Image (cartoon, rainbow, N blue to C red; front, side, top):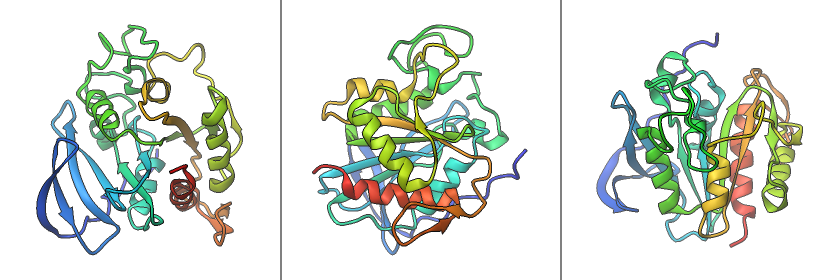
Length: 259
């Protein structure tokens, strides 16, 4: 089992509060993160926090979700690194370190109701003991679904582990962006990641099907060796850990999204 995750980096000192997308948020200064919003609470009452880097007026919007399954630890560490980077002008990056903080606190896949959050979204929802009694039954999936519906990103990158691949399910622009991300991050191959049968109730299919701006979402399966330096496809960063390379790739992808 991996070592306990370190606490994420401290967001810059708060100066004021404001309202964004219907949330009460805190403005910050001095780091790339300039806004921090509590978008919901877990079953056990832990905060789900979305932070923003870049201008609110930016026309290219990327969301990175660091963790859905609590035992998959590379994603939150990737978000920690991402939040130290400045996005290019014209792009904005939102990130959620963990949408399953209860599971993340103890390395458990499920939330505190025993639900797999990646089976709890409305797209092709199928009721079973791990998917919940109904679509969006869980406070964590409700919060993230509401947040994505309000922000309407052009791209959502959902970080998972540990089969190491970038999911091209769905083809078209979704697959094209997934392949580009794979080349930048060094996480390969880029191919269809199976669910062990038909995929039911997962977040990336749901967002791709419901985005009002033509936005898409795909899954990145990070390796267990995410702390080991290896080849990276981001220009100027030939050798990085997958954690850092994936964070750098997110910044590059945000800049390349169509305005």
